[in-house]
Length: 201
Image (cartoon, rainbow, N blue to C red; front, side, top):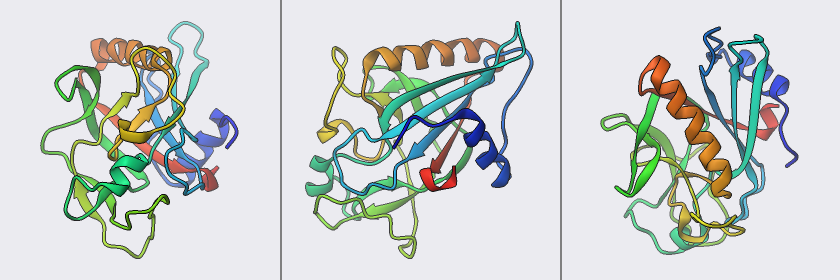
């Protein structure tokens, strides 16, 4: 999937009647995942984008980072949940996340305690992602937005995701967290996460 375009993303958001944050104070973050139609597991073939208004010029600032919105092969083939591995359902999750400690180790954008997300459960034990819309959705917890390796860009998802949204490059992740910390200072520690499909664009 090619690097997504901000205007196309916002058009898709408008069509779905999702909220687009555009506060003129700046750093009102729209954190939006774009899921590839590719169902082969273990690749960073999705995008995590951030758009927000520039407080000085009023223009849109836009960032796009390679990521995965699907679990890695290790978790698909070795289930850590009896119902299967979580695959986040596309949608807009208002005020669902906050800056917290991923696995108690480092700052990331973490799912809020008590907030449940909709997910499919993949229990096929194979190398493809199960996104069958006919399957029953289950409430998922612990779906964080974090990085893979702390020291290098990762090429394979492997154990980095059991359903989390994971950035491949630690430098990209630091940019994301810098934006999030600035947003927290202005608006408080609450973030909305939206997941779109590439076919929405």
